Image (cartoon, rainbow, N blue to C red; front, side, top):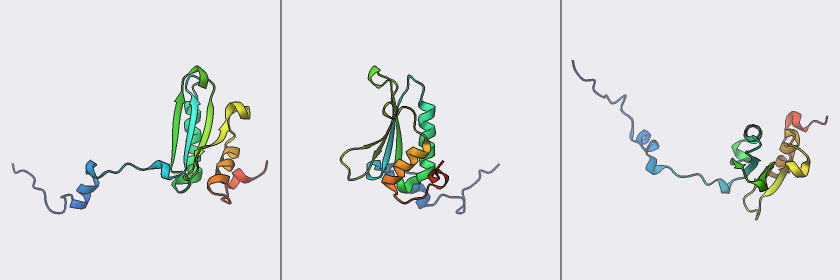
Length: 134
C-alpha cells in the first residue's frame, strides 16, 4: 500500500500557517475600549444572573460600543449581597457605577440598565422596545 502524498491543493499555505502560529498572537487591549464590570456575590449564587446580564448587554450593544464585559465573583463578608455594574470608558479617570443592588433596592431591570449604559456609550441609539414607556 502506498502512503498518501500531500498535494499542493491540500497543503496549508504560509498565510494559513501564520494565522495558527501562537508566537504571532497579540493580546487584545480591552482598556482601550468601553468595558463593563459586573461584581456579584458568589455566596448568593448570582453567577447565573450576572451571565444573563452580560449576555443581554453584549447582544444590545455589540463590540462597537462595548469592548468587553468582565464578571467578578465576590465571596467576602464585606461583599455579601453585592451586585454592581460598572462602566469604564477610555479617557475617564474612574469607572462609573451604573447599578448597585443595595442602593437601588434590587436587581437591575434590564430596560433601565440598558438605557443608562446607552446614554453614556451611544447617546441617541434606539433600544427599540426597551425605549418604549410602560
